[in-house]
Image (cartoon, rainbow, N blue to C red; front, side, top):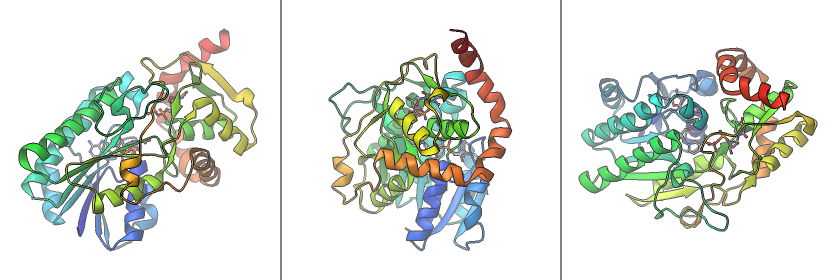
Length: 342
Ligand code: NAD
Ligand code: TYD
């Protein structure tokens, strides 16, 4: 493993992974990214002059561009973070999700096969398992049961990756991560949205009864586990990555408000997300058996993240002042007005 292609490396987890890998190893790291609304070169600003890093502006659905990057940089390992990633946007408009998360994965798998890579790693999500009943935890061998267009598109990607392993013997691994929090997360996902709204004195739109449960892991824990899976994971295997403990959304909101010393009156219950999965919960024993342990609990991860947003207004204020405003109105305008009336 010498020359890594990190697709989606200008996004939240991808950028943290690039930082992590350059700090841990002496590899060449080539970011291949379309720079959608979620991609941001500010996320990679502090490594821009590292001679081991290169950036290619491209779409993973464009086979010619992918092939050129593979050739130009003699890529031997692909780590695929590139995706449309937000459940709410997938409900508003699924099209880009099917393109990137399904067709784009196919294009990368074909390139991996053509260039005979040492490893193709697919970054996936716990959402492929669907809603998990109290008392249960998802294991890697469980059937998939996605329920949102986002989850269904990610599941389709996973199935293609598995098929390329079985059919062509491509050396693949898949990781299924729980909700990540940390630096550089686009402020549409719940923790950065609520932290920045609270800093701006705006309401925090909490869906439904706020009792949904998520496993909020710190992004660098996730990156460390992916690195471990790349080096020690079994070919053809899937690994769940998370903390193995969940928080209700209402508890997550209270941690954010306490960290910021803001009042609970900012919480505004709004109409629920259609098909909202109530609980995700992972069994993480398989990745732990490789010798990994998360360093941060969900409350610690959330506090550390809120702290970062407090200290890095330069990063998020321009995002929230831009195209984000149109999305916010479309997603929350009616919901917030309706809940104020009731
Ligand atoms: P993100 O939305 O912050 O970033 C996605 C990146 O992919 C952006 O830089 C974007 O420009 C790029 N991209 C999108 N379409 C592309 C295309 N067609 N070609 C090239 N680049 C493209 O996402 P994230 O939160 O960093 O998630 C990264 C990966 O991790 C995704 O595959 C996601 O499904 C998975 N994941 C995320 C979480 C989470 O909590 N954020 C949890 C588990 C798994
Ligand atoms: P999100 O960050 O969108 O991640 P995912 O849906 O992929 O888990 O949402 C995390 C949880 O927070 C989820 O249960 C939905 C809830 N949520 C709200 O209550 N209000 C919001 O405005 C958002 C974005 C999410």
